[in-house]
Length: 123
Image (cartoon, rainbow, N blue to C red; front, side):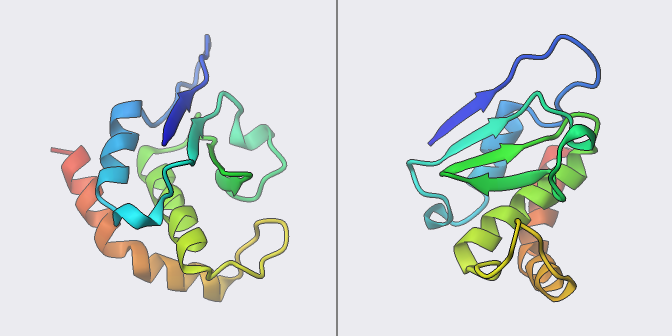
Protein backbone atom coordinates (compact mmCIF):
# COMPACT_ATOMS: atom_id res chain seq x y z
CA UNK A 1 0.00 0.00 0.00
CA UNK A 2 1.26 3.43 -0.91
CA UNK A 3 0.28 6.86 0.40
CA UNK A 4 0.92 9.95 -1.71
CA UNK A 5 0.30 13.47 -0.47
CA UNK A 6 0.34 16.26 -3.03
CA UNK A 7 2.25 19.33 -1.90
CA UNK A 8 0.29 22.54 -1.60
CA UNK A 9 1.46 26.11 -1.09
CA UNK A 10 -1.79 27.84 -0.23
CA UNK A 11 -4.85 27.57 1.96
CA UNK A 12 -6.86 25.53 2.58
CA UNK A 13 -4.63 22.73 3.76
CA UNK A 14 -5.34 19.00 3.55
CA UNK A 15 -7.78 17.94 6.27
CA UNK A 16 -6.07 14.54 6.69
CA UNK A 17 -2.44 13.83 7.47
CA UNK A 18 -0.52 10.70 6.52
CA UNK A 19 -0.51 9.64 10.18
CA UNK A 20 -4.31 10.01 10.41
CA UNK A 21 -4.78 8.07 7.18
CA UNK A 22 -2.59 5.28 8.53
CA UNK A 23 -4.69 5.23 11.73
CA UNK A 24 -7.91 4.97 9.70
CA UNK A 25 -6.52 2.09 7.67
CA UNK A 26 -5.35 0.30 10.82
CA UNK A 27 -8.92 0.27 12.16
CA UNK A 28 -10.60 -1.49 9.25
CA UNK A 29 -10.32 -5.21 8.44
CA UNK A 30 -7.00 -5.84 6.73
CA UNK A 31 -8.52 -7.62 3.73
CA UNK A 32 -10.68 -4.58 2.86
CA UNK A 33 -7.77 -2.81 1.20
CA UNK A 34 -5.45 -4.68 -1.07
CA UNK A 35 -1.70 -4.16 -0.75
CA UNK A 36 -1.37 -2.85 -4.31
CA UNK A 37 -3.66 0.10 -3.67
CA UNK A 38 -2.58 3.74 -3.54
CA UNK A 39 -4.11 6.45 -1.40
CA UNK A 40 -3.59 9.90 -2.87
CA UNK A 41 -4.41 12.99 -0.83
CA UNK A 42 -4.85 15.32 -3.75
CA UNK A 43 -4.05 19.01 -4.02
CA UNK A 44 -7.23 19.43 -6.06
CA UNK A 45 -10.13 21.23 -4.42
CA UNK A 46 -13.34 19.20 -4.27
CA UNK A 47 -15.36 22.33 -5.03
CA UNK A 48 -13.46 22.69 -8.31
CA UNK A 49 -13.77 19.05 -9.34
CA UNK A 50 -16.46 17.37 -11.39
CA UNK A 51 -16.90 14.64 -8.78
CA UNK A 52 -20.03 14.23 -6.70
CA UNK A 53 -18.06 12.81 -3.73
CA UNK A 54 -14.67 13.86 -2.31
CA UNK A 55 -13.26 10.31 -2.20
CA UNK A 56 -13.34 8.17 -5.33
CA UNK A 57 -11.66 4.84 -6.04
CA UNK A 58 -10.38 4.72 -9.59
CA UNK A 59 -7.76 2.46 -11.22
CA UNK A 60 -6.41 1.09 -7.90
CA UNK A 61 -6.13 4.58 -6.37
CA UNK A 62 -8.27 6.17 -3.72
CA UNK A 63 -8.29 9.85 -4.64
CA UNK A 64 -9.00 12.00 -1.59
CA UNK A 65 -9.95 15.64 -2.18
CA UNK A 66 -9.85 16.86 1.42
CA UNK A 67 -8.80 20.50 1.09
CA UNK A 68 -11.28 22.84 2.74
CA UNK A 69 -13.48 20.03 4.05
CA UNK A 70 -13.82 18.86 7.64
CA UNK A 71 -11.71 15.96 8.84
CA UNK A 72 -14.83 14.14 10.07
CA UNK A 73 -16.54 14.42 6.69
CA UNK A 74 -13.48 13.13 4.82
CA UNK A 75 -13.06 10.20 7.21
CA UNK A 76 -16.70 9.24 6.69
CA UNK A 77 -16.41 9.55 2.91
CA UNK A 78 -13.18 7.52 2.85
CA UNK A 79 -14.79 4.72 4.88
CA UNK A 80 -17.84 4.78 2.62
CA UNK A 81 -15.66 4.42 -0.47
CA UNK A 82 -13.53 1.62 1.01
CA UNK A 83 -16.57 -0.33 2.18
CA UNK A 84 -18.38 0.43 -1.07
CA UNK A 85 -15.58 -1.28 -2.98
CA UNK A 86 -15.22 -4.21 -0.59
CA UNK A 87 -18.90 -4.99 -0.12
CA UNK A 88 -19.73 -4.34 -3.79
CA UNK A 89 -22.77 -2.33 -2.68
CA UNK A 90 -21.93 0.25 -5.33
CA UNK A 91 -21.02 -2.30 -7.99
CA UNK A 92 -23.71 -1.09 -10.37
CA UNK A 93 -23.31 2.64 -9.87
CA UNK A 94 -22.82 4.97 -12.79
CA UNK A 95 -20.29 7.76 -12.52
CA UNK A 96 -19.43 6.86 -8.91
CA UNK A 97 -22.85 8.08 -7.76
CA UNK A 98 -24.56 6.43 -4.81
CA UNK A 99 -28.32 6.43 -4.46
CA UNK A 100 -29.93 7.12 -1.07
CA UNK A 101 -30.45 3.43 -0.31
CA UNK A 102 -26.81 2.54 -1.05
CA UNK A 103 -25.52 5.46 1.00
CA UNK A 104 -27.74 4.63 3.98
CA UNK A 105 -26.62 0.99 3.96
CA UNK A 106 -22.95 2.01 3.80
CA UNK A 107 -23.39 4.54 6.61
CA UNK A 108 -24.87 1.78 8.80
CA UNK A 109 -21.94 -0.53 8.02
CA UNK A 110 -19.22 2.05 8.68
CA UNK A 111 -20.79 3.53 11.85
CA UNK A 112 -18.79 1.50 14.43
CA UNK A 113 -15.50 2.05 12.56
CA UNK A 114 -16.21 5.75 12.16
CA UNK A 115 -16.95 6.24 15.88
CA UNK A 116 -13.78 4.38 16.92
CA UNK A 117 -11.61 6.39 14.53
CA UNK A 118 -13.13 9.77 15.45
CA UNK A 119 -12.73 9.04 19.18
CA UNK A 120 -9.09 8.06 18.73
CA UNK A 121 -8.22 11.06 16.53
CA UNK A 122 -9.90 13.47 18.97
CA UNK A 123 -8.05 12.11 22.03
